[in-house]
Length: 378
Image (cartoon, rainbow, N blue to C red; front, side, top):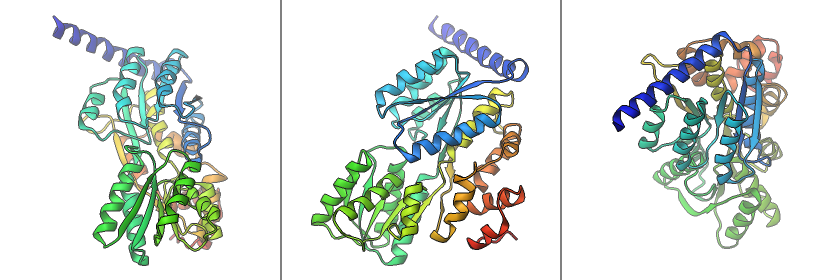
């Protein structure tokens, strides 16, 4: 009897989601898409949200953003509130793996499709449970391990053999892979990690770094996220030190400004573009063109590659990402109405050079700006 009930429930849910797709493609002209962001004080979180909003707006839909006020326990209530508010779909950012199944169950109960944004689970059991949820339509995240790998390689090339690391709390789905890969590559190359600091806020990070520098003398500081790179600069200012290199991941405008000033030596990141690509998955689904691979599976993309922005490239970066949206309305519409291969190719080709070429081609920026940044458009 239990098995029969499960089969009936699954059938009803599937009918519901297929009906939703049909409704998206034939009756409704516009949709409301909900998304959460952990809190309003982080540049990274707001950039992620803004990228989602851009894709939603380009498709003529309404974005409904909700701040979790930096409270993990509030995320569940915010998801339920978005469902109750009539959101047609939800773009969800989750900082801990234990929440994925809970959020998936809520969305299934309300029959609201959801896509994972910027952070995806690593646990195979959680991934399997998501794949069985008919309201789960995919996830998009960076290649976080590569961030750490590139920083480690750069540090070793410079001859920096000891480091102090500032990172997020233990288990963060973004910073933990960066940290682990960095340590693996750095120590394999002869480097030594003399202190690892787990931080909650930029202020907390600055204080912990400053305290660590009292007893440690590293060759450089690595901030696994831009909040921690900025924290490093603040700590050095407080300690009246100005000759310690800082390397960081995350293209925060403040961090980039510090790089131009010479206070941060190297930055890599992807401008939190997962917010845009996750919104593309949601918009495609709502507008009747759900993106699926050749086997009919929803996409789980976790390999958006980081790129480095050098000081001389800041003006180009600003013109593409800060003064404009990274992708145009035309490009957004093409991806929403395109194929799985179109989507994956867009994700895998994304970098500073590719975006510069696209913006020059559509007249958004002048070719001279790319050339001044050392980028050839041939």
